[in-house]
Amino acid sequence: MAGHRDRVTDANQQAIRAFFAGLDEEAHDLAERLAHGDDESVWAWFERRYPKATKRAAKDRHWREFVRAIREFYGDESPLQ
Image (cartoon, rainbow, N blue to C red):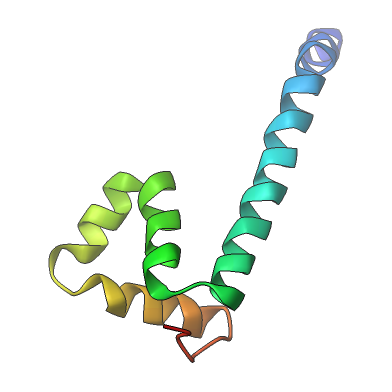
């Protein structure tokens, strides 16, 4: 059984590395937008990656409140609009 797990890991190792490298790039992009972008670019980042979640989050409140909460969570409470 352990041998089977090793084969799966070896076969998918490149795909796993590519996936996590992509996450690193995504995290960098979001950090840049939070540091230098306006609220619209931050919202666009979330909309593109999480369309269902952002639609649900924006349903009962304005999307700027969502971005304000994200900025607060990541320690940047001052929008740069």
